[in-house]
Image (cartoon, rainbow, N blue to C red; front, side, top):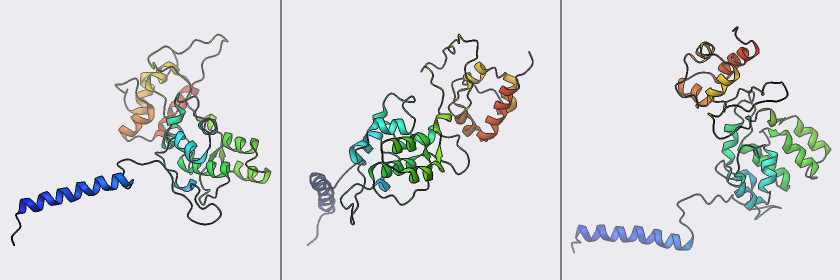
Length: 252
């Protein structure tokens, strides 16, 4: 018996979409990540969420839901309380964008959160290779999550992240820098989040900017790291040159 090709095509469509509907009804079909980590499948912690499966796309809120570590604790440990007003939806992968100026072989990122969560909850974690913020170590010790021996070991890989946080500024980057009343200039910090307009406010001249960057960027609101990436420049080299200009201001 010859089957019409149109009938076959219709049957295939019905089978495909029917299967999707059935899978969705049974909970097997998902168009987005569920943001739920895998669980230990054996041993003492069987059935408990595994911190090793935490992803960069997870938010602090996702971590709190899965591991019962509050978003406030996470924000405090990783120094982001002053960088965003919505700590609940802060994604872990954003840590690498904040802490971009760490030295070689040093990183504060998703792996650091995994390690912190494992230590905080007492769950096993196999990597233990990423750095961890100094404040995170203090919290673990203050709350009795680690002992003196563990604290000393963690201090070897701890980083004082407060030294690398961007200065707290208003959202309007075109606004004038706040005036000081104590006779001292505002602190001048150059990092990846510094915008070009900040450099002018620090006293960097156009000629110095050209020497460091090769040109004066058209957008004064562009972040320094973004410009370096766009132009293929070494951020560390540019930062060193600009810092040198700050230390030795040009003659009037």
